[in-house]
Length: 196
Ligand SMILES: *[C@@H]1O[C@H](CO)[C@@H](O)[C@H](O)[C@H]1NC(C)=O
Ligand SMILES: *[C@@H]1O[C@H](CO)[C@@H](O)[C@H](O)[C@H]1NC(C)=O
Ligand SMILES: *[C@@H]1O[C@H](CO)[C@@H](O)[C@H](O)[C@H]1NC(C)=O
Image (cartoon, rainbow, N blue to C red; front, side, top):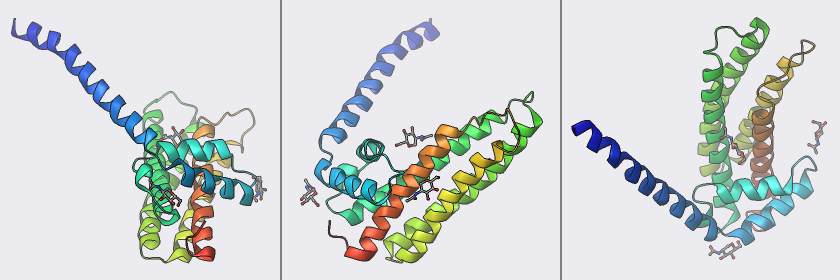
């Protein structure tokens, strides 16, 4: 009897949790400072043709706290944090993939390399955020550039054997693009002292 009542409670609980999440998400989306985000992304996409404007706007708008950003400097911090979160999520995903014992040994060894690259990159992102906060923009720039290289190195590993398809292409590409966004913002701040 007891178990039954708890399971019938589970659905309304789940639903109200879901409602709570979705209202808070839409709230942060509507109050996003979209003018700042659009202006920044336009500049980023102009400075690097490899960056998609739409990807930039969508990513920054969905980032937690981007609605609180009222200047480029704050948006820059948010973008590096977004990069760190993306790396952390992707590393967890690799960990899941590695649980499959029947995986091709070549793919497995690539995934191990990527796991190590991402682990280092997460630490680097943490330092890049500190450097950024303390206005050591050159150091922050070097850190984010190395994260960008890590995504490329990870992806290239899979290309060393013919016929192998990287299971991480989208994730590496996301990390690459998020790095480009952070780098553009860091460089804008370095050069213009934060005005846009
Ligand atoms: C764009 O990407 C290509 C291929 O990855 C690279 O060779 C080129 O340097 C990139 N351009 C810029 C401006 O970063
Ligand atoms: C990484 O960021 C991109 C762009 O914001 C997003 O679409 C993607 O879902 C994120 N991936 C992970 C694993 O967090
Ligand atoms: C949004 O960003 C613009 C440009 O930096 C700024 O002038 C404006 O005050 C910001 N608005 C809000 C609501 O933070």
